[in-house]
Image (cartoon, rainbow, N blue to C red; front, side):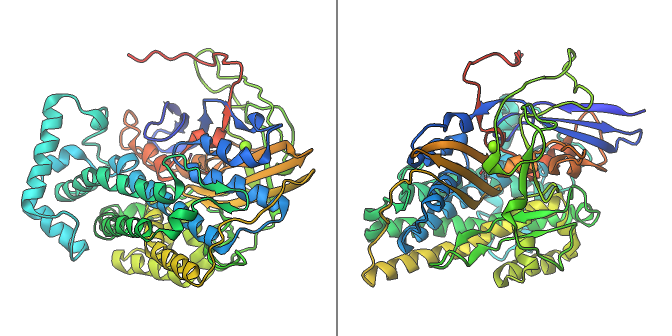
Length: 557
Ligand code: NFE
Ligand code: MG
């Protein structure tokens, strides 16, 4: 008999997400529903405001990908005006976004996703000398690796466990058979979990060096950036590069080797394609590399049905959102320029269950050409790989040769997690070049960081970029020099999407189909696959109820 499992809330994400699945007699997931359960409200707040404020307001969608919204909003207004910022501004924006990526990926792999792969209790029983040997089998100079260090880590973890105040390690599913790493591998990655707590701080500082502060930077303006003095200050540039070196070392000698270890022991899941999902991938393209803003570090394009032999060009007219199963009024799929945000909460039934085939999420359903699309690291890496991008090909081929996995294994939860690490490496390898480009451009006499521009009486524009979690678009319509309509379609809106009018599931939902649960009372496999997308529901819903009405009450015991 089919049974339902509800995981609510999914923790270690930003925002509020409820996942419901139906499992069969073998404990295999046969259906799934993704619900965003908190309403926010920025698209409405933006109406009537000065378009130049859109970036500062929209970056408050989130506390994670703050800069990405700042940039998308700024790009949208620049597109409406028809202004292109100077080269120095393009490079400085890449440096801020690059720092955000580095921070985001390290925090995600270790602190948000790590405990889905790593069994902390098993790490306590590891032999430290075996952990040293294992770490060396995937890296010549492993990060912070010695018998004494691993003994120290075990002592710290044991003290945690004995204190009974487990903090981040509480209420986990330790011992679940779906944990596949042997004790020494658990110890190596657990030790990097602790190291990453300090390293992420260094990456956050990198962002603040050109962004003014972190998490919400303040140095972008429509037409360019205001970090003039930072760009002209050699010690500032040095501080950025110094921190980059530390973060890059961690990525190369901890993060990448740890992903190789995960691939070694979770290989079968990759090969079986566990967690693949819709297999349609979208990338708007990110990190402009030339002054025409054409060449991108992450290429732009669409892949359909997992077919890597063809990359389609994006036709922006084919981007739509609809609300058949979302708590809004409105009908049919509409382009974001015509999008509306009219809340219509119908909730769950009295027992807190889904109401049949009705509305069940605050997230709208974005579609490309009528299809659900996965966005994010895996989409970017696959679009780059299939486009023949040299740097991305090298990274993917390296991963494939080191792990012995076939390319198709990328279509999986493991592949999604590995792709995120590859792009951390790609960014770490490229930011230094942007710093040097900035220095040589300034030395050649170009000190411009801003292009003067005025807000037109009426215009429309869109800003499209790649945020850490995927393709991000903001669409703005300006009338009487004020914002008449504003629609954001963000990465987690794409990935956390509910069903659409045709009944097609969104990417999270589809990725869960077929997953076998070792123990339905411990839905570890569900959480691992959902976390591999790095959900951010705060961004995905970006709406606040202005009347402060109570939607649901929770009692935490
Ligand atoms: Ni709130 Fe975000 C990113 C954006 S949402 S984290 O990355 O844009 O998916
Ligand atoms: Mg929106």
